[in-house]
Image (spheres, rainbow, N blue to C red):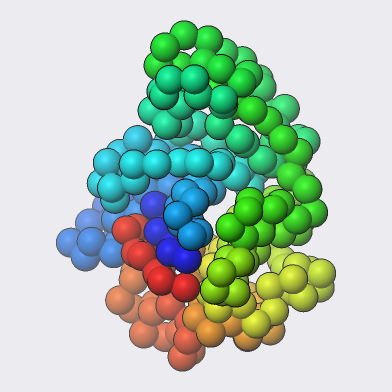
Length: 259
């Protein structure tokens, strides 16, 4: 199983518009962050999790040429507004529609934003075509499974995802955009090979985990490797990563991890 970090930044990205702080002016490529998503390849199956506004550019930059399944953690703008560019992966003869899995609430937002894309076949050549499914407790994709849990993110709930590749038995948990990781979500992810979790900034935030809170969760999960994502311009990669405990690092755009 391979995990590609398409983007690791917040809804504003880094550098931010009209900001001249040291991180936004940094020449360190690790401080250049597009909006957060990951691309998971599991035994040849290509699974896209979320689609940032920069999704098209991310695909070109990181060489993504196939998407077989799309998983949406929640329908905030920085995770859903790139879905129109999934049309490129629907542009095939006799295409049956791209399977899209999410919560009922998020699927309703997809219907509202992309009414022209709902259905088993593209409405016109080159259009996207989404076949919407409410995310089951465990989604069986043949080559492996994706189990879901719920995470609090302000007034909404976000889907936390745990991937398990059938052939290798390797497990990967992806918990973005959350203020806490409740007991059931911790149990689901306990002992995974790779854990990726929201770690917005050093200071507390009302709807996201701070870096200190994320490190505490990582310790409880006990993953072999943990990476923090959804990072603001308050996080200078070199400085902050040097302060993290062993086994915990900062994600960066374009990072590929073999799980």
